Amino acid sequence: MKAALVSRYGPPNVISVGETPTPQPAPREVLVRVHATTVSRTDCGELAPYPAVLARLMYGLWRPRRSIFGVDFAGVVEATGADVTAFKVGDRVFGICPIRRNGGHAEYVCIPEDGPIARLPAHVTFENGVVCEGAYYADSCLNRANLKPGRKILIYGASGAIGSSAVQLAELSGAEVTAVVATQHVALARSLGADRVIDYLKEDFSKLGERFDCVLDAVGKTSFFKCRKVMTREAVFMAADMGAWGQNIFLLLWSAITRNGRVAIPVARSGRAPAFVKFMSELLERGQFRAVVDRTYPLDAIADAYRYVQTGQKTGIVVVTP
Image (tube, rainbow, N blue to C red; front, side):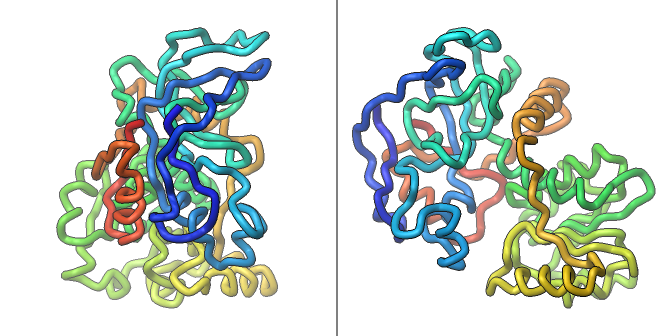
């Protein structure tokens, strides 16, 4: 099969698209013919881990533990291993590739039938079905926020994969959502259901004179010290990553030492991904969640997809079609 292969850390030019053996499904696994995947900030972080020491403990100390990246996948079940009962050949499926094994940047991928995989609703295209990773991170943050009707959340960077997902999921909770985006994304944020949209190029959100029960930095481009001006005394600042200079790690330690709970980098509970993908299948079926697709690249141009994602300017997801 054709795949984007990675044998060492570095810039996107270390990725080579070539042939590698097609995986064979083990018992209780399904082989999926991948029709769409994504290149995400997670993939970029795996390609060039930062901070290097901490990240490489997860991805591999000297070289990547896996040779094929890619978190999201959507496709068709091509074959099943022994004892598979949940899926059959021909089923349209989507989900999240387990981080400890080869991922979706290939023509085929094997997924445990009880893993993070679910049926893709018939009316949803494969390109619009690779939505789980950003939504999964967003959901982890929102669970920490304990959103419900009457609570108010500010989402900074509401146009990326995590931010656009957070707006939609927060709206479903009944909370009042304020989205902070650049001028070109104002209409998008409104279409996703934000109750109010602030164009940060025209207005400083930290001078609103209003307080929020939680603030989510979905892109790692603002800071706790700026956001605390609009936070209630009990509010929590949630970051989707470690920040531009890794500053959120130190803030997280400070929050833990002082036990004030003011800063959090939420991590999903172990084993929660399968249930979350099934939840996403239900939302897609009901039309309560939609993908925001920025660009689509063929697998042969996946290095260009990485370069674009690394600019930090993408909107929603960047799709790759093997």
